Image 1 (cartoon, rainbow, N blue to C red):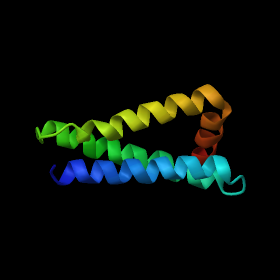
Image 2: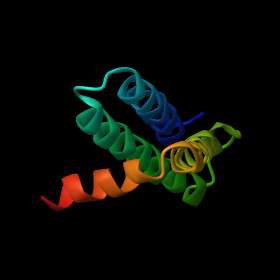
Image 3: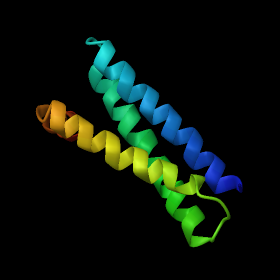
Image 4: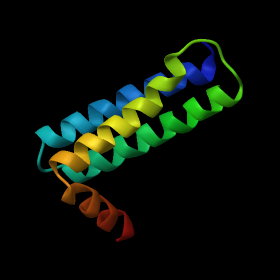
Length: 91
């Protein structure tokens, strides 16, 4: 694994943990949800960079899969969380 693949895994784990903590803690859920989404987005960009550079291994796909899987689960279980997140970012 190369540098971008490692960073994509690190950001995917941080984003997943932030998403999980946002469901557990109601007071800081907006901040944790936003930071988790941002970390997953950065991990996905690092993963796309690793794909562009043709790095070896399949771990570079982990951040992309985690981003789409967690986004799907979030929208499936609590569809208004995305609207709340986008409203929070706008203001």
